[in-house]
Image (tube, rainbow, N blue to C red; front, side, top):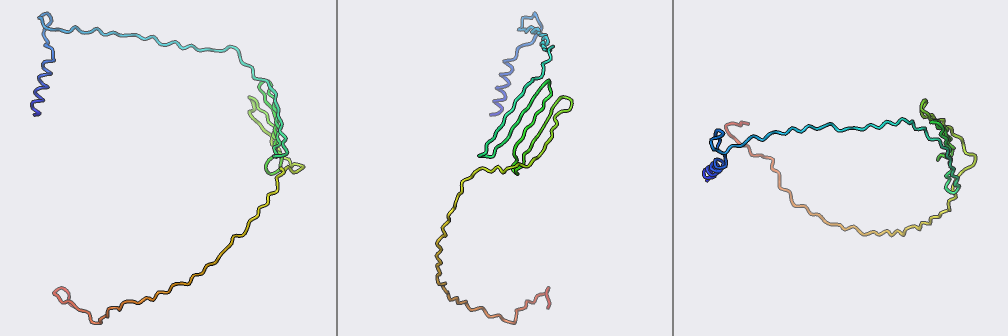
Length: 174
């Protein structure tokens, strides 16, 4: 069966092939297709250069929070002028000390901070309501049940004979 398929495919390939002969002899002849070479111009990249130098932003801000109920007390102020920034902030740490940070930042020295810790004069504790927990002791009942006793009778053990049977063969001699 495979031979028939091979023969069929060979016949189809021969039939679909064109006859190649000399031009002008009346045979079917393909003219070569001229190749087209397309030249592509590089894309133009536009580079934008700003001549104006943008001046640094000048600003001043500050804020303060003083919440005695939660103990959140902090403040900050900052001033920026001609690219130089200076400021200070403070807050109350969890251990009861006030942290005060004074800082400056510029293009020449970078960011520099001075940190100080001061004890707080008064204790800042939020007023919490008194909560009383009442725990009732659990009722414990002790139940003792008598243990069941079972009598165990063992089966008789097979007797052990002192005389053991010896095998005599040509290989083992005792």
